[in-house]
Length: 459
Image (tube, rainbow, N blue to C red; front, side, top):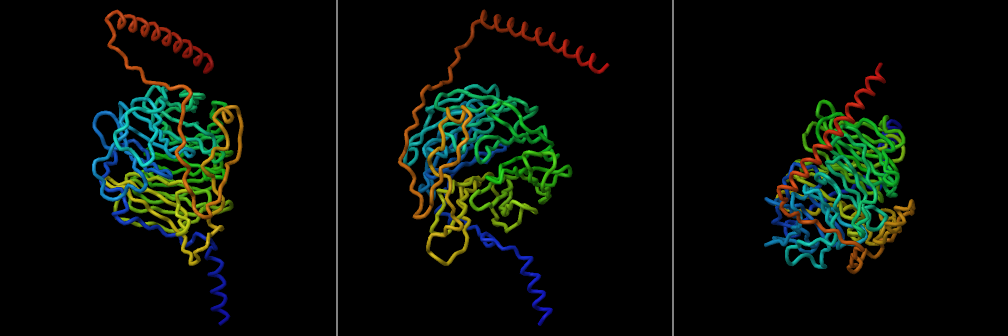
């Protein structure tokens, strides 16, 4: 009996106490999915899908130009003809919903522009071609767009011109621009307080950017593999979670302290599959989800402040491979069924909502798994944030469920438009060639000066 009690005592110490140990994922039935979509199979690494309180957006497989669909959350089942958002001249590479205006969606494209769109309540009844704002400034294709988590009308975009730009979308201008990357930027993420950005790049480095000083605050070697790498902030834990590939092409992850990026707190191989990993984090529950492109499963973990920092919980398993994935805002979760995380899985022809729930018998509001969460009101304006302000999120209780605000009209103060260029005359072409030749000669002279200076320093 003593031996048995000792054994049980040891086991009880091994089993970690956690409210989220039994979280389980359930996919919606087919009639409650968005059936009949054409999700883009583009090789560009983005989530392909975005989700808000009212709508789901999916990048569309389209030849010539770029488009995406915006579907109302209750517009499920077999979809017929779907009106699209079709303003871009090149393929759409990323989409995002505003956290403070459910009807505002942003997109970026190979045409080098970002666009802001106003979606009517109930969704589109006809194709939308005119954006309410255009973000013109990048010199090459724009690969990502992220709304600021706390400041109204601020977005960050990254481009293959190796810059990250911060835009005030009301004015339609790039308020800040950060260089410092030496290759294509693969992912960008705001920290919980919206004061810093983390980026991963094809140059295999991870960087922490202070956008308001337009500088790279920290830089370190990331995962050494050739394939895509991504990073996200772990909410108010102020750590960075970085996924990528090892030298031997194993999929792996690391947890980093932004003040000391060179020394990972945790480094771990996951498996040998080839699909790029998409990480998502829920700050209220400290749950981390990792979905691999081409996989059917989603792994989920719990993050802790102390060593070992991360605990594996379980896998959500499915036989249907995913092209992309999005996490809905916390305010879109069904509190009554103890749904702590709501995700949307993008497959080739279907968008499938997945609900992660904590099993509870009581029908009362479970305040231990639903703490107050950032609500639909920004804590500062664009000008306050650009002026250096940092304010905490305005939180709300989810008791009684969340009711989405009525549509708020986005009214830009200045509307930028893409100018349609007329064909140039022969004289204009000659002048342009002459100006470019002068520029080349100047740059060659600058390079020669720099080469001489390098030799001088080497000697």
